[in-house]
Length: 344
Ligand SMILES: *Cc1c(COP(=O)(O)O)cnc(C)c1O
Image (cartoon, rainbow, N blue to C red; front, side):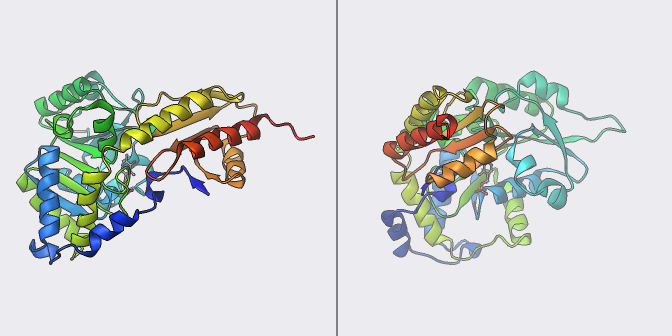
C-alpha cells in the first residue's frame, strides 16, 4: 500500500528510531531531562519565543494554548476550514468554554480588514473576542502559505485591539522550506505558536508550543491538568532533534512531488480542478457527473493507494517522508484508470 493520506503515516526511519535509544533522559516534569531541555531551547529560538513546552501532539498544543489565552464565553476568531473547528472534537467549547467566530477566508487565509470587522468588544450583549488563531500552512486550503505581509497585518490588528494570537504551526516547517522565510519571522508579533514533529518532520509523536515565559508557565499547569505531562520525553525529544537536523531540507522533495501531482492530475479527464499547490498538500476536485470522492477513495485503495475524501467530490493527497516519485506516477495512472477506463 502507498499511503498518501497524511504525514502521520510516515514510517519512522531506522536512523530516527536509533536516535532515541542512546538519548540521555531524566524526569521532564521536574525539568531534569537534558535532551528535552536542549530541544526546547532550540525550538524556542527557532520560533523566536522566550520559552517552549513539549507536548504529545499538535492538537494538545492548540487546546492548551486556547485554554491559556481565553476566558469562558469569549470568542475565537479563525478561518472556517480550520483544524480547531473541524478535527478537535469540539475541544474549544468542551475544555475552554470558548465560542468560535468563523471567518470565510480565501485559501484558508483572512485579511486584516476581515479581522478588524470580526473583532467584538465593549458591547454589553456581545461575546468578547479573546483569541485569533490561524494555520500556517492552511491545511484544508491545500497547504496554502500565508504571505509574511498578511501575517504582519493581522498581527498588527490583533495587537492594536489587545487580542491574543496563536499560530497553528502543524505545517509551519513546510512554509519555511517553501519560502525560505525563517519561522521566527513568521511568528513575530504572535503570542504563541507551535510546531509539530509528526507531520513533515516524520516523528512518531511530539509537538512544541512556544511563547512568553508567563504563558508557558500557565500552559505547563494546563498540560498537567489534562494528563499531558509525560515523564521521560527525552527519547521522543531525541527523535525531534534528529528530525530537525536531518529531515528539514528533504521537505523540498515532498513539495516537488506535490507539484508533480498537481500538474499531472490536472490533465486527467474527469478532474475538474486542483487547488494551487504551495507545499505538500494536493486537493483534487472531480466532475460531479462522475464517481464521488468516497468511490474514488475506495477504488484507489483497491489499486494500492490510500488518500482521503474531504468533501463529496474532493480528495486530499499529502506528500511526505518515504514516498517516491514512482509511487506518485503510479497514483496518477491509477486515478486516470479509475476515471476513464470504461467497463466493457
Ligand atoms: C495535524 C494538524 C493539527 C494537529 O496535529 P496532531 O499532532 O496530529 O495532533 C493541528 N492543526 C493542523 C492544521 C493540522 O494539520
